[in-house]
Image (cartoon, rainbow, N blue to C red; front, side):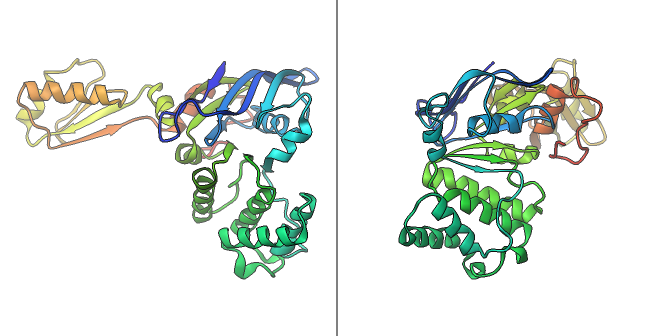
Length: 338
């Protein structure tokens, strides 16, 4: 299955490709981890890869970022062929893993300067870039404090700042907000958005938080048992799942009953006490317009109208719930897949 990430929003179709993979496969012994997946991700976009534990998300990141080799497939990252230009890819990317890679014995500034040295920056440029990142991530006041004193959110910000020292054009974020409180998570979301909007980088994001993908990603793919089972924008994926509806509320029973008679009774739900009518719908604009046209044609006015569509929880469970092993269930907490 090819994941074609043509943008439908502000980032337009036709952008140069930042990441492409064809027939990407990986196995460990008899276990197939990736089963011939295809990816095409344009520059300057955020792409999210979802999947239960063991689906192959981290393995995909490790292969694309040159950390491990694939058994089969062709990969290009930032214009470079993985098979022959791995060093060039490493010079063009940044990787933030599931766990912070900061040194607790060093200060924030010392951690950044260490990364500057590893990126072969001269001392003056290293200091300049470190100062800029400390300011951008609101860590200037804590610059001389040991990282051991930092909160989880501060560590994660510093970890991402260290990734940016080398000025990467493609950034892999492997579950970057795991373990953060809601406020710190939203701060990270703002930073991630700014990397794309202000710097034009490409973000490859894996996450266990479905709300995170919904909020950030231009395009989402669902990986299950090593195969891509769906892809699209968040709204496209939601419309694929049954359960969406339009809810109309009326001023009196007369209007409610008159409206009830206008629509196909299959799936229709009328609530006489609440004076509401629930009409199955995919939530699209044409579907909404069709309902309003029917009401207008009968001169019936609804007091209120709301559109309800399945969320990414529903998408995820529908696409992977039937094949997930019994020892890896979905976490009942909304928006969090374990």
